[in-house]
Image 1 (cartoon, rainbow, N blue to C red):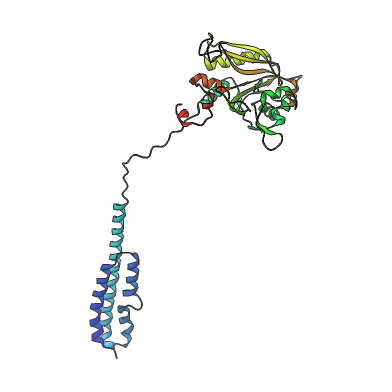
Image 2: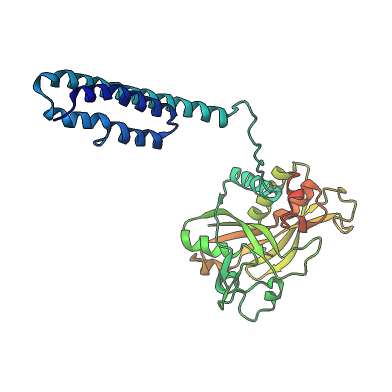
Length: 347
Ligand code: PHE
């Protein structure tokens, strides 16, 4: 037989004890431990329910109702405590991880264009106006494209002009000029007429000095069509430099030699520093060398897939660093590719 009055009386202390313990609970783990202890299968209230069947019928409702009230009170208290803990945690994180959105952001280093890139873009802009398209080709070339197809056979003395860096793969090298691009673009588009500039980095095995580096950019130009003459070459280049430097600029052509052009020439511009009087920049001559040029050699046209009986063309190769140095009065060409931020940040 169960002791009903005792059971009934035990309920109040059960509730008090549970509520008192709940006060001390501080976190999620404590809450779930408390739930097991005071509302779980083996908790005191649940045991009272377990004993109901043995209680005399007439007393059952009273004990059952009371036990239910206690259970509901504990459940309500648990929910309340859970919510209070959640709010406390929120307050804590708001206090502890305070974010001041009025603080200024961390400044980002501003990027900028390399001075030679600025010059290259200026060059593309002017050639663009004159109907030229930009065509890029690879910096790592084969001996065939860099020399052979440009009419410079294996033991030709002209190879001395373009000593370069060779890779460990025989016949693969760093291009010494943008001229191999002539063959690439011709082979892609022959027999259509061409009017392109071929820009990019070139490499030579050179003694480094204030005026020469082992790497530099070139902008190659190539025009192939029917009836292209030397007059077109001179007219185009003169117009180009007038558009780049101003209408007053004075230029001159000199005869020269390249195996891939015939006839060949070089173009000079009057020294922009001394206006032709002669200074250190122009070694006292009054002129600055700008580019090599000429009429595309029939063998090269043929190697590119054009019939030299029907087509003719002109080509030129200029060094943008020259122009960059003049524009910004840079003293030492090695600064350009030396990767020193103190230099680069000035542009
Ligand atoms: N490729 C030559 C050089 O680097 C320049 C050039 C290009 C000359 C095109 C004639 C025609 O010296």
